[in-house]
View 1 (tube, rainbow, N blue to C red):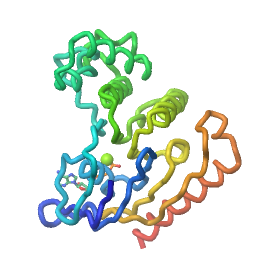
View 2: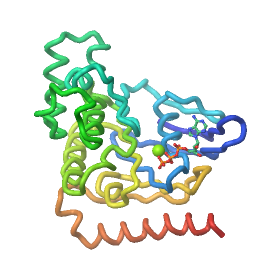
View 3: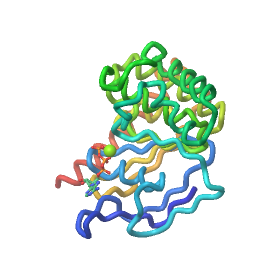
Length: 244
Ligand SMILES: Nc1ncnc2c1ncn2[C@@H]1O[C@H](COP(=O)(O)OP(=O)(O)OP(=O)(O)O)[C@@H](O)[C@H]1O
Ligand SMILES: [Mg+2]
């Protein structure tokens, strides 16, 4: 997938994303890091085809099956968790037992096996987000778009889910774009970290993440800490520049 000069201006005045070139590598994970309000969600929605760019073009071939986890969980309040998660398969016309089985499998993966029968209103914020992640995975996407999926979770749970996601996307060679505010999450999951400026989002820097296997012990290595530190400096530099 390739973005050429993709830009978004809302209401002819709010420039959210400045013209941007970005190539997503197939089967790789690209993390987008940037200050709040800089245009990350807008960029992700354009990549997912749910928001039209006001400039440039997005080239995709062949058309991917997209799994989208929005920044808000967007669960249907009248459906229980299992039936929310299985909805993309249901809309695909898959048999009921397949929908239930696959939904249950993804729920187990995100640690919500016990919550399958509950309604969204009975879940905590972090549980709702995990349900939304499960739903984005249920139809075996080849392009997975995650907008701060684990921001509401405690760090131990978040690390565990990052490890699950790392395994899954590598095993299935899913192309992923991950928006996150966590530098360590970006470094842990991504093959490339793209640092964005304050609004309108521009690419300040791209970091190649050279690690192979993404296992828990990676977080304790010196190479991991070094990368994290330089990305932090870059992000802070972009924000300080903006203030001056
Ligand atoms: N539908 C919309 N109409 C008008 N302005 C919008 C719309 N959606 C987003 N914006 C504006 O575009 C800018 C970027 O918003 P966006 O949600 O993409 O930021 P973000 O980087 O995802 O922020 P956060 O990290 O807080 O989620 C903001 O100034 C926001 O007010
Ligand atoms: Mg956002």
